[in-house]
Image 1: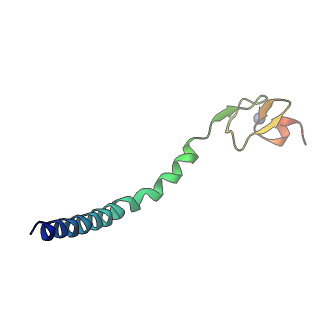
Image 2 (image 1 turned 90 degrees about the vertical axis):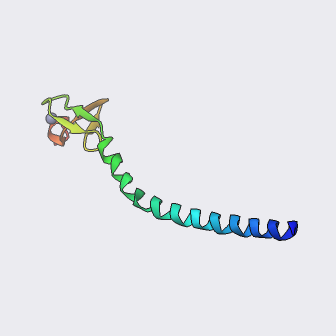
Length: 76
Ligand SMILES: [Zn+2]
């Protein structure tokens, strides 16, 4: 009798674990949208010449200073 109860308990545990994992997987799907947060992380920098603010990724660095365009950096 005890053995049968143990087997029944294990079966219930396995079914419960499978169901729990399946329902968890459905909840985790919408997390893909979180990748967009990196765009908001851009730091705004002031151009050393014309004081225009541009994002760090678009900035041109010359002699340790940030410029908004090649014209301001003196590259053109
Ligand atoms: Zn500039």
